[in-house]
Amino acid sequence: MYLTYFNGSWSEGNSPLFGAMDHSVWLGSSVFDGARSVRGHMPDLRPHLERVVRSSTSVGLVCPLSVDEMEKLVREGVAKFPPDAELYIRPLVFGTDGLLIPVAEKSAFALTLFDAPMPPFTGFSACLSSLRRPDADMAVADAKASALYANSTKALRLAKERGYDNAVMVDSQGNVAEFATANLFFVTPQGKVVTPVPNGTFLSGITRARVIKLLAEAGVPVEERSVKPEELLTALEIFNTGNYGKVTPCVRYEDRTLPVGPVATQARDLYFAFMDAA
Image (cartoon, rainbow, N blue to C red; front, side):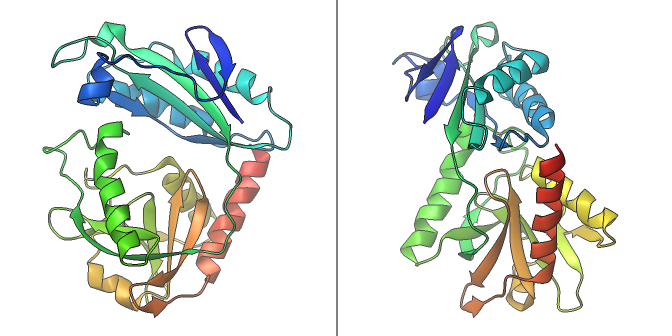
């Protein structure tokens, strides 16, 4: 089931939003975000909506709705689904007018809610990508901009051609940035939990921040630092954090099989306990 709010009303299905001359269609001026509703629980909803506003500004748009207005719409839309639904919440801001520069005041807004069951905690495979994340002086890397995802999807296509589900992407200096679709964590042979330090080349995710906080509160500190790709070859565990699956283990990296380890399991358990209380 898809449910979309646009131009003041809700509709079911894949609602049309764009015209052929809209700036977002031919020049990519759109931003979005992703949040979750799981059985009515909406963890960190407001931070996701606040990021929509910031992302809009970064690409020269203006979010037409306030955070309060978006939150009210989200809760209204979620109430239209069964109480046990597991949903993806996707607010979208897009440019409609302008030749090369979008007319910020004419930015449009749509909110889509759709069924998206939480994926099983069985894991995924990944390889090292030859593609790199752009630096902040190369692209609007501080926004969840739709245009940035051509980089991600190409990395995913190349990984799938090699028989993997996902790809580890590096920055311009050759340090690990993140997975193509989510932030990356790993456990060193010494038992330390590490995640790449935010350096402007990737979004430091809301779920990432929540997991770091939850682990720290449980007595498991997470070290944020520069990470060399070769460190992943000796990792005891590798896992990701992101809105879609929250915490998901990597069970094969390059030619190594990895366990669904205790740190990833604890991180997921802690997150789901937090979500159930949200």
